[in-house]
Length: 224
Image (cartoon, rainbow, N blue to C red; front, side, top):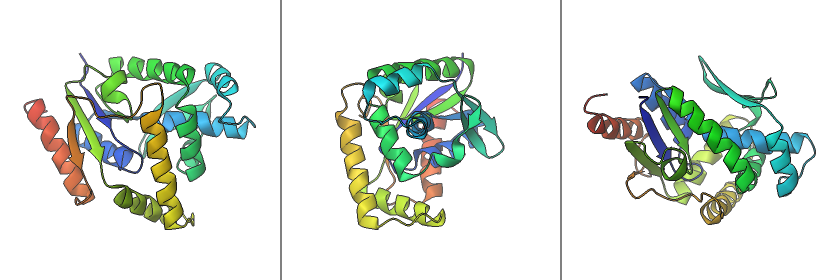
């Protein structure tokens, strides 16, 4: 029986980077489900499909091949054999992902794929509906969060490091809008699972966040 760990939280909470480090420390795989939704959103944009067009996006999603592989530098996401990993972390991709992730048909396709992967591997899965939907029976569930201002500052600095120049206030405004959209969507909204442990990293360093999550996991598994 594979070891599955669920991690949820809002945009900018550092889920993907923290989850990747935690998974490496435990010697298991890390599935970044957000990258899968970003890949759908980016593919829609590349094909001239408005992410707001539910029917066209859903039909496109049903007709593309979306896969992930694990390289030395982490998860790579592929659409119809093309590695789209390098274009998934822009604000445009983030907003497109938040839009397409509201569509029941898209979510059904993604959840099925994510559950299939988790059944085959020891895996830490991060996203926004992992503890409540994808891995509802996971023995360990983490809800990773931080204040909107801290999350916006982190995202702002990440964008600067990548040479992407955005105004901090715009990053904060986009983040707040994304939070509202994620938490109010009809299908699988972002929320903390009743049995999840909340970890607020507002006052934590990256390493402190990783260490705290490892402590929670190892305590739950009695020394994983």
